[in-house]
Length: 169
Image 1 (cartoon, helix red, strand yellow):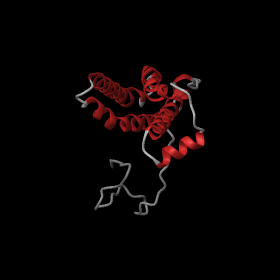
Image 2 (cartoon, rainbow, N blue to C red):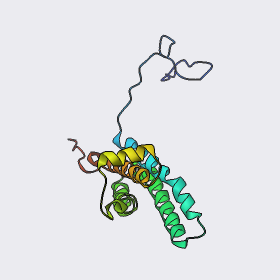
Image 3 (spheres, helix red, strand yellow):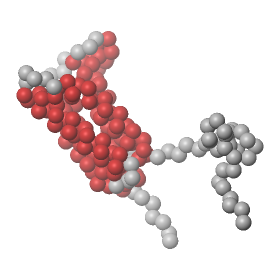
């Protein structure tokens, strides 16, 4: 009895499977997976913060800044572990942990300083200053963008976690 293989032939140079005609022209279907996209967005935003927080953690003259840097790096490490061990697999507890990280750590660290004091510039002036010159306007602009991406990453898989379709078995 002959054993049937899924792919009978492979390209010799790459070892990749070929179609029945011998070419690799078959179309691949890309499946939209909100859990994976959410994991990628969380990973990018969390890793974007690491260089500045490493600098803060290594600053020897201010013990409070060092403590905040190390605590933030610990939160990022926990977030990355949770994303790639639980969130990708669809565990609800992982979404809850990421909800806590976004609203209890990222919101106060990234956006709350924006609400201290009086705003004296328009949005257009702020965006122009953030685009052209480094400084606090750019830092706050980056923080708003990062927090927005985290919110998108938090909202994307909500349907996967809380509104699962019921199967009729």
